Length: 420
Image (cartoon, rainbow, N blue to C red):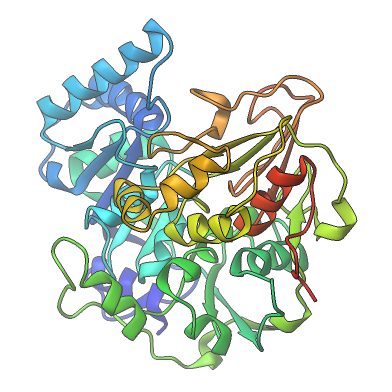
């Protein structure tokens, strides 16, 4: 069996499972942000109202309303705080970081776990070798909180092998964006995606993170990177360390329903253009579009790797006077690293504005709302119309290098030397 099948078998008390079977499995972790937590709590109180046997398995992170601008939004956080304390669930308050990064940094996700959450990017935790899926708020209230269980149909697995070496100036984010277009949005409906191959195996943990992040846009149920020495070394740095005896796949590619192979040497710097993540093309083809905003942040950005890359581009340069560059660390730990490495001052002197660790301008709740005709280039995971303000505004997604270079130019442009 592969990793997903072994996790489901273990969690459902079975020796084995097969694709297509439906199992009822024990859930190890429920992840909620302030918006989904508020909805889940409302359903739970109104329709369920049973004891929660394992409150320690639930985690709520305030990452959307990280600085509530209205009394109504402040009321959502007040309700969530009181509900979390009353139910004894884990609460990470404003400034902790965005949901998924904060949960990982807090040691709440480990290899072999079953992790559920209403946020569509919950499958990103497959980067640690967890089975992570997005479920609706009603499922959280009806089965996960009162019974610590959920039902799953065992998915078929598609193995995605990445080979070769990237060109100078091409980042892992560029490869991930390129893959979305090559595989096709929605093409992997209800599949489990295994990201592997020589290219993936040589990446750091946080660069591997960018591939399971694609899961929802490809239509997959879950995705993962098989845990190895890179995973284990990273998990040992987290609270609670590395768990004993977590499942591992058999490593047999014949177990996959399909195998897709790609050469990353084909990839040049990419930008995902409106209206979807799959509308991806070479940066050179989108060059010249004026941008009023540039942002490092979101589930796919705000990593220390992104801040270092941006600082390399911006050191000794200034952001264009018509463009605002926003920096949103993915977690408090990333901000602390940025302070120690001098990146805060470097980016500040270049004209960037720092925001608290959070989900940033995602859904334009606290920052980054755009007016009609404006455009933003960012490291975020989504670019749907209206997601960051007006439906007549445009969001472009790119690597930290491209975002920083575009902030200096005031328009979409490629970083010097990229893609040669």
